[in-house]
View 1 (tube, helix red, strand yellow):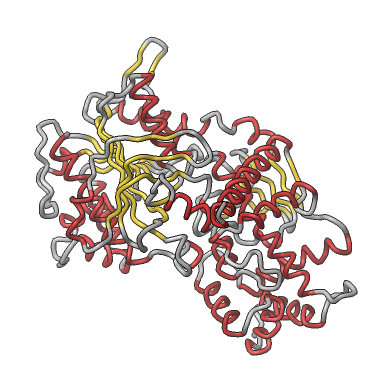
View 2 (cartoon, rainbow, N blue to C red; view 1 turned 90 degrees about the vertical axis):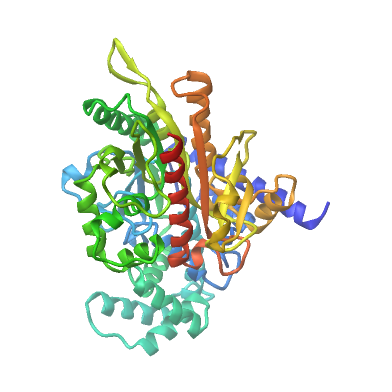
Length: 556
């Protein structure tokens, strides 16, 4: 057996151990990161060695890109808290606690006191796996920091005390000497001055995180404290969370809210096209030209770049759209998935981008839903495709004509900004494979100057649960996968259940899937932790948006 194949098997076994251990801990209700279960998670993550966590296996170097990536997806102040509780929606805001939302992940979090952080988990098991993986990574890095903070006899070093004074001064709003502070921090991180300075600057630019000095000190301080006082860190899962997980409680309420709106408007007999995507590209494409007649845009991509720079332009488009057929349904049920309903009858007199003409006699409705997260995609799509039952005696099938999914994914054979057209979704670690006919074809994007890749996509358990060996297996084996993402198989499972088993939507419902590459996890410096896609994502996003709309407007 070759080394790469051996490593691939070991890595897939590590993913399975992580997955099974996490499910067991949820059922149990709690665990200590420094206990047996916590150590099992750490060992599995060491064995997996995910690309996104960089130098996780280096005993000396603290992984800096990974720290920023995780800090932006966890609530501000998480590093100060020894007690973390994952909960369902249990009314903490009603008790007066202000919600803290991480800058890069939609989670309502509540800082209860100096040592406790509660995090609402209303988006399914994938969300729980995601946060537990990130926390395990943080605990591993905290142990590295502790080793640098203490000498061979278990005493706190002078360097650590100096870093402590720096953090205290910073928290008090006092000026700090960056030359000295960088030296203290560099010693603790096991990194060069240049690496430390760049990381400090990245944390300063980030929204919703404390400074790197503060983050590293508190991350290490709790670990240092445990050395003398015993375990203080513990993760809890509330009884309510364990009761509702996997039962579609939030997705059902979310879907019924949308169906009730359509029913009240008398729209449940009009053709309906469901689109899972961001909430700006379809709005900007359909309303941008009409709302900004005095602005000159060379293309939709140019319009997108200008609105990204100028929030007032985005606000103008939104206000215009709300007066011309767009209705926003804000989520109030815990899914964190807002929805836009677009009545295309209101578009007939509006200027549309070149090549986009509403040709259908019966004007369709567009239901644009925000990105789901992992298993949440099945929960919400499954509930949305079920018949609407306004009373015990009445059942109305949803008039779904097509489902389109535009998402960002990790590409295996190209680069950031390229496009992937899936022919099947393969669910990692299971025998669940979903081949389908995709209405989107590579030829439709050939003039963009981008790489276009067609083939199977792997739906993974988590982006942070992948490494080079596993990804190379997907790419080079007979799977010949072109990319990885987290929702495709879940969406397809819901669609096939509705169309082929329940018969609640037409069996020939049109499917359109396309992804643009947010990262290449096989390429050093191009993983998600190396930075956002930025402007590189604008051209593929709007090209996919236009092609989806073109097909809906022509074929509906």
